Image 1 (cartoon, rainbow, N blue to C red):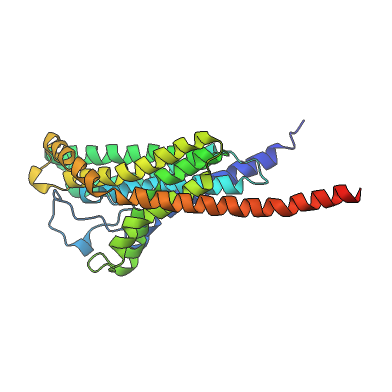
Image 2 (cartoon, helix red, strand yellow):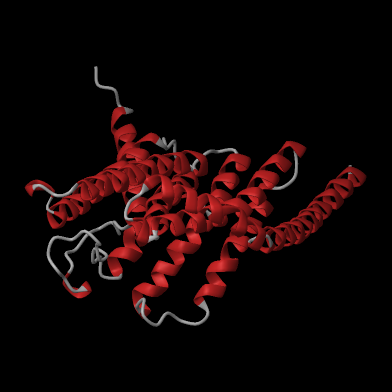
Length: 313
């Protein structure tokens, strides 16, 4: 006996997989549109000009670590949101979308790390620093891929509190992703003057909008507010500290010294980056007030109609 439901179920899984693959590609797209040239490498075997570097789907470089993290993470977040909204009227599962995102990321990693390993001469007795560098980049990439799966799971949840928290946690990487889109068309040498301003405040807008979407009822959702605002304060400082530690070429791959340098910068960055959470809170409170007023305004005509019907009866 043939199960008539197997066809539609397979179609839904394929649709979810395609959504996931599309989300993964969308996350990497600004880097690809910008040329997808592997950044210059300190340990490259042959002297090469930037425009002559090979193509790589991922920006593998310690100087682009936060960009790499953002491009990979956003793929999962985009896919999760797409699954969430496509699920309306359909019984879509998130796990095929997760597989779609993973396939895109795995293919991208294989292509990019093959190019990197070849250029560093890993197959022909490269020095220990090159091997350590590749292992470190691979570890960071795998961590970003796992967090992309977590982002997909959170943003695809039917419950608004978990989904909105996933959006808020992706706000800072989203600003980096947005910046890559701008640079893809303007070039990195002369980026537009508005870009630093936009990249600094865009996460506040995203977090504020996510909190308006989340709402405050039940009161347990205030935990989402607290975590989101705290993340908006900590994550940019963490990005700054990590990029500082990884970008110190003078340390020549001394992991302990790089970690110490990042730890020194982190509290300094925290003291500087405190306004974005405040702005996000103002946006969230103002938006929530407007939302409550609008919702109450929509409820009153309904109450009037009910009362009129009762009186007529």
